[in-house]
Length: 436
Ligand code: NAD
Image (cartoon, rainbow, N blue to C red; front, top):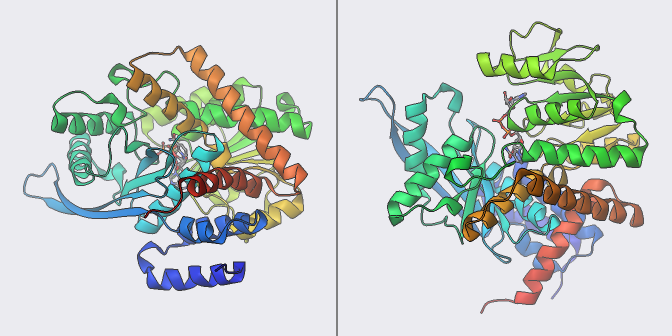
């Protein structure tokens, strides 16, 4: 029996009211994007319904000790695996106070489409802990990370589910996860996580891969749009792993960086910011606040600055139906996951803004994570040049496939990218068939 798209939407609504555990604005966004793409591609309705929900979701609560010995707190942690059809699952771990099951599930779903779009042999996963890591000492963060790893240890594994860094986590956190897992099995297992320090089996080029990959795409998009990058300006929201590297590589490509921001503030300088000076300031002071060589702007104002390229590289839900019409960029290059709502997508499409959607835009990270995993399981080391060459080839290939589909079928770039990914996952599901 088949059902119409409307009936599927109704099922989503019913499903969400039945399964309120997953419901959140971000999970709804991921589902709506998926349903829009599924409708355009006329996706098999049974597969459509199956892919709307993650296959496995784990919610744990666990105690950890603050540096004040008598102070014990309880944290909530998550690990979600969306699709287990094509190989191990892969996805980052996020530490942020707003993390919840719905957010992690949305991120896991996007990881499925992203890995498939890049033709990597993974399904999507994601994890997180609902804490504000900026209020944690290093020793507190280590204890929390080790305990969280133990809580999810039955779900992860080098051939099951391989975590990586995301918002609020970094290569040190990956090193603690690797150590905790290795202590349990009794020997070193570098391939349990990616985004590790290089001395522990990390890959050359991984830490900057997401930013580098996005800039590879911006260069391709600029060619397509006839935009001379050497005469262009860019604004970047977020100055962490992704944002700072996007700023660095864009500046190296000759783009004038006129605005940057982080959680503390935004800075605007129409004459151009010195990216090295901004990086040094953030390294020394942890935040952008206090950087003097420019005018202060809020994060909301930053998004509406005059520029050719706008790169949101911080949080979800930044470009909405409310502010999209005031954006002035020609190219929106999404480093963050889920920065743009469905309503904003329509406004941007009507305005003719070219979008590099998140599933494509930030896929450089998981691509070099894949390289790291391959190197670890084969006990090989690739050079930075080899990694960057392979990354470039994969990013440009995915860009061209997406652009071709968007032009051929008259689609926005997000829908085209999602269809590229979803189609591959759906084919794999249908080929494996239904158990039992
Ligand atoms: P990060 O923790 O290194 O940096 C986050 C940055 O965002 C910081 O500068 C922080 O101050 C800023 N920020 C936080 N809240 C903000 C707010 N409300 N307004 C403005 N700025 C804010 O994280 P990251 O690894 O750079 O990740 C950023 C985004 O990129 C996330 O959406 C993440 O999912 C996505 N992403 C990261 C990777 C990766 O390899 N790290 C890969 C793919 C996607």
